[in-house]
Length: 595
Image (cartoon, rainbow, N blue to C red):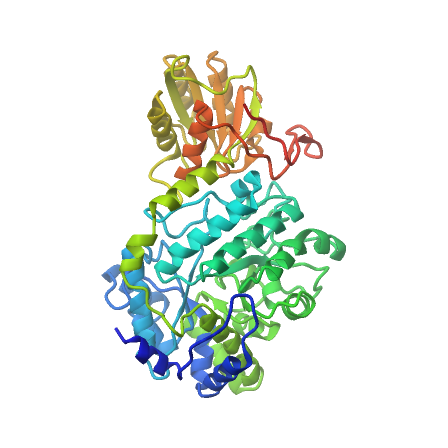
């Protein structure tokens, strides 16, 4: 591994004195500009790309990952990727086998830095990931997993949001990840939103703005670049930009009061990067282009009007929302012309890289414009300490990732987020003396990284630890008549039934499951493990809780509330509409019971 002195020499003696949230000192900026001026055109092109790469190792991935790299990227390893394309960033994914465990992640990060710095005029790589917590996590246990954004919205604590950013940031930095694509700054005002939902802090723009800013402050204190997404706001859509092209119909005035507030707050808090959304907002740009490719939105609004001069990164360029109008060779060029700095995960890196190179060579894109983005990226790398200390090593990982006090903080935060919506009787809290035998049934969706097993099993285990005898029975997202009958039979020997529900619709057989369990006469406690809107369609349950995710930390907190070990404190961060009249509100923002 090159020494610190070698690294500094490789970066032209740059030791940044940049302070968090402050503009670069003139002398340091002059050195960075000099560094940019010595780069070849090909090196500048590489710096604006953030690529995926398969494998747990930078030089010796498994054969299946070598094959995937060859098929998609034309290289065998991360080291070859850096040698060929000189990319400025790499993003980690679970499905790309980058995130097996903390020690491996740290080794991969160091291997990537070593491979990049060994190149002529080599620069450290800005390694990123999507560690939102809640339903989107790329790094699982033993790393600390915190409640997700909407759960934090239910807790309503700025201090908790800051704590999450600070502790999660420390763990990411210990593993070599210096840029996190979080927090989500979208205001989720559409209950039918298929892609944001509980990833948002809520539906009130002021509350979302406060929590976004607080989380940004936490990440900044940990030396990790937070990323506010998805500008100009993805909260009011019924289309997923991964698979379609969302259209936001907000007027300019509505956008100013609703969508813009969290991004303004993030910028005021010193956000280092902002991610664009692949969505159409005609009131902001009537060209028909997605925001990622819109100069009026990226440059005119984000940079000039809101005053953001940090790094602008696209959402992943393989998503349908950015590919519906232009080909993969045009998208990266148009994004740079719009004012973007980092091009995230193009589906065909070779096509995208050569398209940008050709655009500069033909004059469509000036080299000066490209250099502006490279300079912003280098400023961020300098600010994060990458030009001084790009390596992390193993020692810090063991001391930091999944530290006992971090895990305890996550549990305490979760205890403040669980929301009790209904409690007839009251049924809750249950006691092992009055209700010793519990049946836990319900949906077991695919597990995010923050889980150790199916939600029914995790919840049953947590209740058993609290003194109950809890039995788990997975009934799935769409329970059959036979499965429902099995659950009803099992309820006959239980004193109460806990049902985990997942995004219940009007036609969902989950409704039949709850109704038939309630008909047994046993108390039924419904726990909405994703969106909190399920309560409107399940009137037969005697009690309703919302956890906003099915990760272990949130399910354990729900168990403590059910058992009365802690009182519920969460308040709805979004309104719940009536099932029979979506224009009417069943439970408003701020609703939440306690005992």
